[in-house]
Length: 233
Image (cartoon, rainbow, N blue to C red; front, side):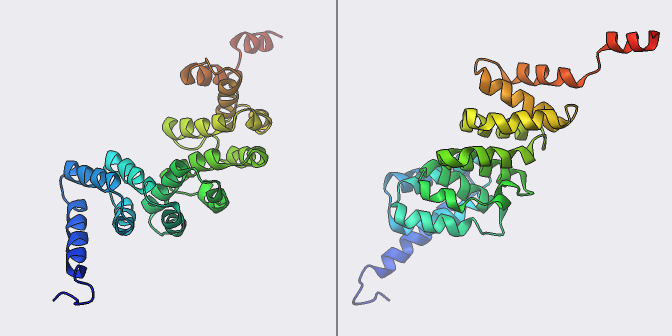
């Protein structure tokens, strides 16, 4: 029954139910079109359905569009809600909240990115935290953030390592002292090679990632002529 003082209450609830059903549809193209429509016609009522979907959406393209739709809502609504998501037990919810905050670019969000997020055991959360932290860090925090990032050097596969390298490159020259120290601590380790390659890419932006990592690995390899000379002595 419709509330006589709020004649549209039932219609409002029905509309939200329809939106949630479309967001839960098995067809990703339907979910994508739904999110695009929500972003094109933003309404505060969309906040919770969009946030809820962020934590469970399996399709990358739809997830990115969810962030896009959230960008069209007022910051005073989205920022506190995203901050709350950062404490979720669901890794995807944390990762997507970080991604959306980096897209919004509000400097207040810098204070919400903790060392625990940067060191998160979940690779996707850590990767998104690196990207968001680098994008939001104020000038006077860049060097210390780079120092924190060095703890993650050599972590994971090439995709993860390149993601960290991109975060260092956003910090640009502020990250070079930390990278140079990491490169020389134990030159043969994966972390040191990663540090050298990243420093090369910052110093020479024209260098490709593949070439930088190839060159960075060479100092860790024994020189065969040097080894031969030692055996002949």
